[in-house]
Amino acid sequence: MEAKQFASLRRRYRAGKSRRTGYESQWDEIEYFTGPLREEGNTYSSPQVSGSGQQKRKDLWDLTGIESREKLSSSMYQSIIPTSLRWFLASFRKSMLNRDTESKTWLDQES
Image (cartoon, rainbow, N blue to C red; front, side, top):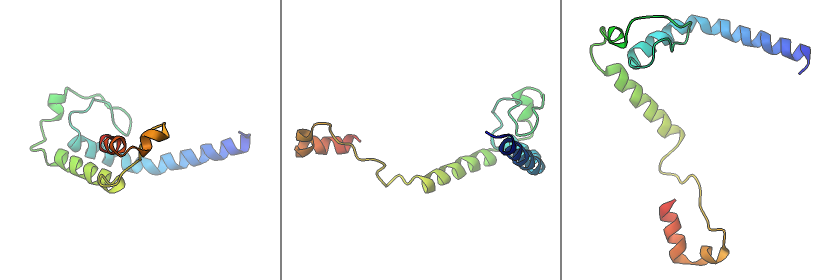
């Protein structure tokens, strides 16, 4: 990579990182309420040292945030990867087995 390209890439990285810093505290707060059982110090901004997980959960009153995160991730997954569509079609290496309807039916059911 040429020096100019590297400098340009580094400049773009720093610009993107500086634009992101305003949102990091919000991401940390969202993570606090939607993933309270995650490891400490696993934050978007600089790692913060805090007490035990028990102390971290003392101001969580219910599971609304956690359940909402699960529903959101599930709906995103289903909209991106429809479960009703076949992802691939398996076939045998030997053409003789591909012509056999019983073998082909079995392969379709298993894949």
